[in-house]
Every structure is written in C-alpha cells, then in structure tokens.
Image 1 (cartoon, protein in one colour):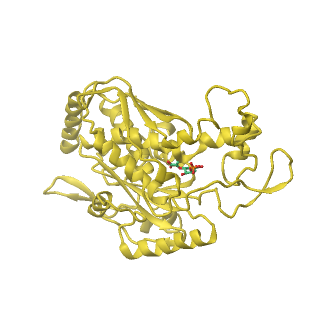
Image 2 (cartoon, rainbow, N blue to C red):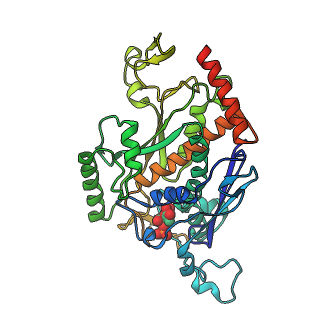
Image 3 (cartoon, rainbow, N blue to C red):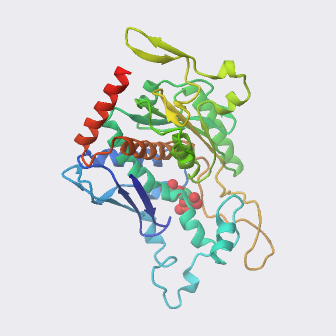
Length: 390
Ligand code: EPS
C-alpha cells in the first residue's frame, strides 16, 4: 500500500514528507523533483513569501544511486524564512520569550484560525495557522513527484492547467499536447493554455491587487495513458472517483471538486451526457464518443483521460481585512494581516497533479503489486494482454 505523511509548520525549520510502499527500482531524478517544486512556486498573484523561498528536495532515505530501494523515502524541505522566526517559534520555551511571540488573536474569516483555536484550546491562532498554511503542500508536491516518476514507467502522465480565475474562463477544451507544452514553460503567468484567456484572467488578478482583495478559480488535472480498470465499483471505498475527490478537497482553499463535466451534466439530459460506446474492428479496441465522464465510470477508470477539477475559494488573508472578533477582548476587530498571496490557482493545479499522481500510483500498486519495478511491469504487461484479448 502506498502511504504518505507530511509534517512541518509554515515558519518552522523545515517540512518533512515520508512515502512508503513505492517498489524498488523506480528512477528518481532530483532535478525533476525540484522542477515540480519550482512549478508550485510560480504564478502571477503569489505574495512576498515566494521571493524568500527556493524549494529544493533533500532526500535522506529510500533512494540510492538514483533509484528507490523499496524502503521508506524521507524528504526534508527547508523553510528559508525560518531564520526570521527562530525567536517567535522556538522548539524549546525561552525564558522571557513572551514578547518575541507573534500572536494572532484576530482570526481570519475563512481560515482555520477560529475553529482550530477553539478546538485545540489556544488563545493564539498562530499555532493553528502555522500548520493549516498551504506551505504544507510543498511536501505533497515532493512526494507527488516520486509518484509521477513511478507512473511515467507505465506511460502515465499527470498535468494540469487553469480553466478559471474569478469569472474569467478558458471556455474550451485543452489537448494533452497543450498541457505538455504548458508544463515546460519557464515563465508562468496564470497556467492557462490560451494566451487570450490568460490575459483576461490576469486582469482579474490585477483588479484584486488594486482593491486589496483575493481571488479564487478552477484548475483541471488531466491524467493521460491510464489503463482501464483502476479502482472498483464493488465497495464505496474502492471507488477511485471518491478517492480522487478526497485527495483534491483535502487541499487548502479547495471547496469543490468535479469529475469530468459533472456540473454541466447535472443540468442536461442523459442522451446528451453519456459517452457512447463504439468498437474499432481493425485496432480491436473499444472507443468512446466523448469523454464527459472524465475517464471514470462506476468508480473505475475506463481508459480515457481522467479529468478532475478543483474549485478554489479566494485566499482568506485579505489586505483589506474583514470583520472579526479579538480572541482576547471579544471586541469587534479587523482580521489579522501580515502578507499574503492574491491568487494561487496555477500553484493549486500543480498540487492537484501531485495528489492525483499519488492516488493513481496507489491504485496501480494495489492492482499490480510488485516489490520491484520489474515485477510490477511484468504484472502490468500480463494485464494489458488480458485487456487486448478481451
Ligand atoms: C499562507 C500564507 C503565506 C503563503 C503561504 C500560505 O505565507 P506567509 O504567511 O509566510 O506569507 O505564502 O504559502 C506558502 C508559504 C507556500 O509555500 O505556498 C497561508 O496562510 O496559507
């Protein structure tokens, strides 16, 4: 079973990720992992923190001579900002350190601040926001890059693009080739495949900057080259669409998820929504009239591209803060503000890729097993033969 965990606070010394269950022999390229970390840091709308951090993966176990060895993989990711927080967030309590703390007593509407403070019984939301922060997603992207390396061995790719920022929409489908080209760009504006739509999206972020506001949007993750039959219809918790939905909604600021064209489909008739079934006699395989199901039927992959979208609410830290209440005085007060991002949809797309890659790698490992990559590949080839001969 593939499992991962992350630890670390936003302004602590470092983030940590562990990944257990990847077979031995998966090639690991550090530059490829760092490239994913770089992609997560990009996009118009990011705040001052991204100028401080240059994320790099420091793999300390589980990989030797550029290949996994089957043992748990541990990755450290340094927080460069930590040097500015050693007195505010020391591990050991320092005598007289009280005035060095940077308490947050005015919870931000929409953030974990208030619910977390009440639940964990802190009168300082600092201890909550440090972990609730999307800084944690750096660790997810690092392990996600390893899941991607595993999937690539089976010809499966996972990429993303931004389809909406505020009310500005892409309004058309994107091809896999367009997503490949997008992921190779060395300058990222808003992660949209269409230059005209991207400019409309930029205007929305410009407006948010000017008005001290923030803005959300929608990203789409596409998994390409996926075999038929991952996940299962037999129990609620083996349905792959359910697992993908949980993975996406677990991301900070994501409030909604859509598999395929769910919203559009729910407003249409069945005759317009289902992907018709056809058969290519020469190629001896089934084909489909469209991919509105987003590659999943009955909780199983159907061999078409997986399409999963994440709907991101606007970031809850506002330069023009909203009404709140001071935890100490219980008097009305404006919510806390230090600095923040204005829009993070392209970064969220990259994090979504990592989450989808981890879920798919988990489903592949569950189905094809293998302690080594070569064993897994043999099992996979046997299954593909069965599918071909069906
Ligand atoms: C975040 C607040 C900001 C973001 C942060 C998420 O950090 P800071 O409080 O240090 O300015 O930049 O995102 C990251 C640090 C990151 O790496 O994505 C929050 O409160 O969620």
